[in-house]
Image (cartoon, rainbow, N blue to C red; front, side, top):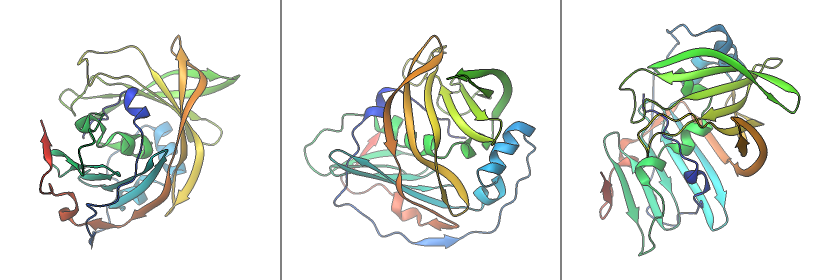
Length: 263
């Protein structure tokens, strides 16, 4: 699995809208895929509440828009191989399965890290389903207590060599009454390459149903202190969400002329 590379500064990269470099998308129908792996009961219930892994595994493509102050950021992803394209006003970021590339429309500098960011929001958005990927180890942990309510926790870690940051750790906290995902706590090792004990927090709870899948409508990043969330800091809205059982053409993710390969 491509591990989730997370960093707090990337959360605040200003989203923007692409006005060109848009390629026509074609789709190919895929065969039905069923779930063969056995998961712990608690996370299995969460998967089921959010639409079920079998249904998720039969989806092939996803697109969503993140509105921003200077424009919209549109992400298109191929769900099976995690190829992606992010279209912005002045830049495009893509991943063709082997390389991450950045294409600039003008002299405006891209201020983020393309190799870090190309799948960042995709992984945040597709929780809890990406926590069913191969190479994941599950462990029950102490609940999170927030505003008097207790949220049981499932710690997520990775087998050695899985992804670019196998030392990253995540905790999914869930509502035991509804079996919906409530919080994601995560550490960051992408830049330091060192294991971290500082967990950051995203609140889930504003949901929308798309093609039978319960997906976030808004994600809220929280300030934190002593390993617990304290107060809301910023929101990200996700609009124009589309999920399909047809796979986008690989040509959508090809490196365009003039793009830079990110090493």
